[in-house]
Image 1 (cartoon, helix red, strand yellow):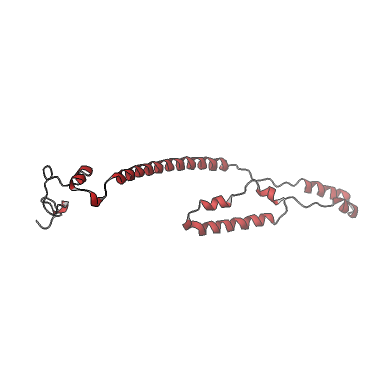
Image 2 (image 1 turned 180 degrees about the horizontal axis):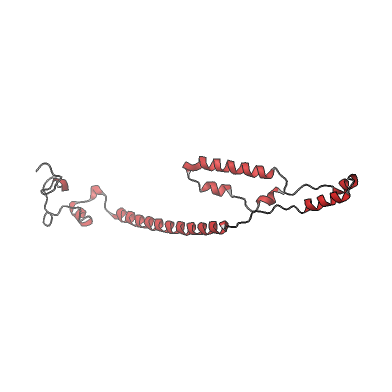
Length: 172
């Protein structure tokens, strides 16, 4: 009986917990405890109204029409499930779909960055080891970082901040 009531709106708590970041586990536990409290409160009441033996009351009451009147009123009671007047469920589904699309786009961008990083790593792995690299090899692989005395002459210690004309140079 109770399982039928919650079957429509059951939450997959295990899947939910997998998506909660480690720093927010306490919030998740508090939220789940509050949900469990509400669910337990709902389940302490029966799903349907209890059955009343109106024949017993008709036999005991001096006016059996009064018992019939109570019976029709009692059987006519129905507590409707709340309606979604503002169409909130469709809004939530639309938001969920939009978030899923954003997540897929984000994942695709990160995957592209991972592929670029792997390509760079594969290029770095093909370079000779630093202790085996000569100055000529360094100039070949890193032309913008290597010393070029013809096109870019520099003075010892060949660092940019120690060159003439540099504003950070306090020694000249």
